[in-house]
Amino acid sequence: MTLKVACPTCKKEVIWQAESQHRPFCSKRCQLIDIGDWADENHKISQPIQGATELNEEMLDAIEEQFLQHNKFFVEPE
Image (cartoon, rainbow, N blue to C red; front, side, top):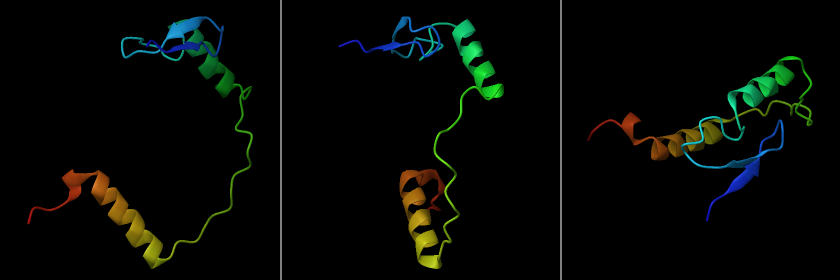
């Protein structure tokens, strides 16, 4: 099945595949228009920034363990 999405800028239908160089946009032009809109602050993230959560040693250990499980190249050989 071929996945088709609408270009966020012009709404033209775009096939979602690795060969689609500008996905999800239909062209470089639409991609540049979108980045310009972000630069002009026409697009904004709607949720406010969440307050900082203080991490304890246990939380840091869990994050490190999860990272090492998914990034085996950081593990020293035994």
